[in-house]
Length: 245
Length: 343
Image 1: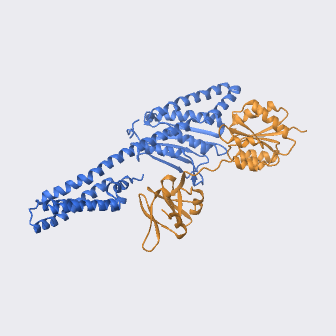
Image 2: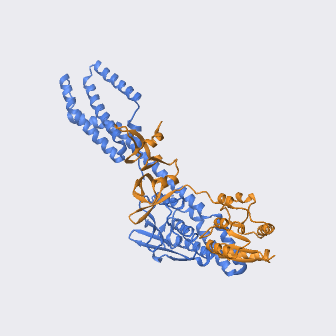
Image 3: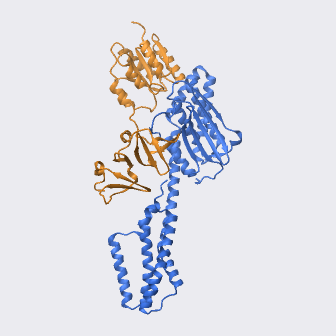
């Protein structure tokens, strides 16, 4: 059997060197190549066809999870992860091995032993595992908006309402009005539906700023705001939100 | 910051439910009826002259509550009471003349009406304002404390320590002098990072030193990928500033500028004083804020909360992308301003 090929990818040079050294000691007959970021690792993975890849999960360019998915059926993957960074429980299902940084030699030796035993069989399908490992997107806390050519960072807690404005959206706070490069629809999809209510095709309001909803003489429903003079229309489609309020 | 304390206090102070209102009207009718029965017309008229402007003032405040702040509410109360008293004066004179009872002189009546109403209606508003101010101050102090605590937690991530130590271990084996250098930076960093939370103020020089140790550690870890430059003008080294504000910006720059970008990233930290304002800029040519419109980072949120708690509106913070593609975090602080909140 030809010498197994191992790819090591880590963006911190000293940690990469340490891992390479440790592997040389544990697995002397292997050939080892190192990549300093996700893109280099991807290139090496395609050209050099490694049998095993030790992938740091957090890397610039392309992260370890993405690489594991791309390497797919050809390469056995061992993840290298920083302490506390990922839910390690997900690894323990046995589909794939991992080592935690700083690397303990015995732990690495065990991982090598296991991966050597698996080399003859094709690597397991990691798609499912990778999607579970990818941290769930956190609820957004701020947004980026422009006034003229200045970018403002607006805390979502300061937003009073959003208003559709041609292709873009206008965001209104107590202190300023700015534009964001997302449609109201896209925004509505990514914001917490308990914190922001869409009340009209063109308006989405911060729930905690709603003071009251009242019918005008013509029967239209309007939302009045706490501490802000604007009143916003509620279209027929969204009037159910205010039933029983 | 929305200040609707006043708008909420007014209905509490002057409003009432229908049942309470009816009950009050009943009481008024009883008192009025009693006075009429006893033929104390002068007292009855005086009573009416006091109650009617007070009622009008209450209604005006209730109707306008949504747009009012404390000063406005006070002014409106005085104006409404004054106007009410002035309007009620001729009616009072005419009624008493019709009943043929001796009326109070105009000045006395006005003083009476305004005096009683301001005392009965104005004092509660005054106390409510004092209470609301105290509450606001307490809230700010709590926010400052919470932000400080979060800053402390963010400082000593186990992840940071583990990775740094792992680097040191490798260096100890291969380049002992550099390992020692790294340990020295780590010790100095921990030294200045840890006790800071106990003191409310630090100096610009000290904060730059802390940022310097941190960047030196990161430069060893990232190797050639990270280059940095710190420039603290010696004349500004003694300027007082809150601890760990600068660190938040530098860490942010490493996390969002250096870590996600392949290749070399430069970070520059500078400070200038213009008049009474100190401007600190952390600039990097890394990955930057890019096209993401929504973010979930809490670092900047904490930073803003701290600035708001410490300086109110006198401090500023902007994150921007320059035309040359640099990401700049710009912090503006008033120099020598006594912090609004002492520990």
